[in-house]
Image (tube, rainbow, N blue to C red; front, side, top):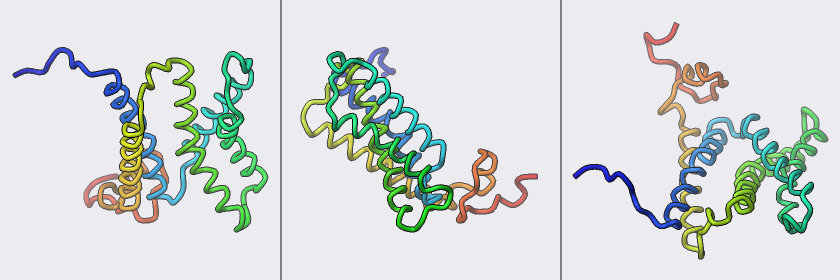
Length: 188
């Protein structure tokens, strides 16, 4: 019994599989950062802002008859720019009342607006790709996203069980407060 040369799947199953895989890494990475550092790191924030704002600007420049977007859809895509303006307004030391607002805007921008922008762009480019009909496939995808987010968060929060401070340093990251020192005899 060998590996089949071609695995036949329905387009719906294929779409579900692609979506699950495409969402697993960024969602688990965001969960890891929140677990390890208590915040999302700058590269994830900037990537979300650039991607979503690029989609927003492109959609605003296309005549509405060619890409009919609702004000709600455009408003969702504006959230990362609202976050950026709020960060600039708050300065380098936001007051205590502004910190939760910035945190919520960051989370919404990275965990909701970014996937939503990608969804909208894929819907425009190739609507057949996202042929998940009904609520069950979407709920199952949401469950997969939640599992990977919580798994990433758990691994980040207990990074000391899997990673050492040296692992973070080699990767060019600041080691979290709870990281475990390198194994004896390893390192410089």
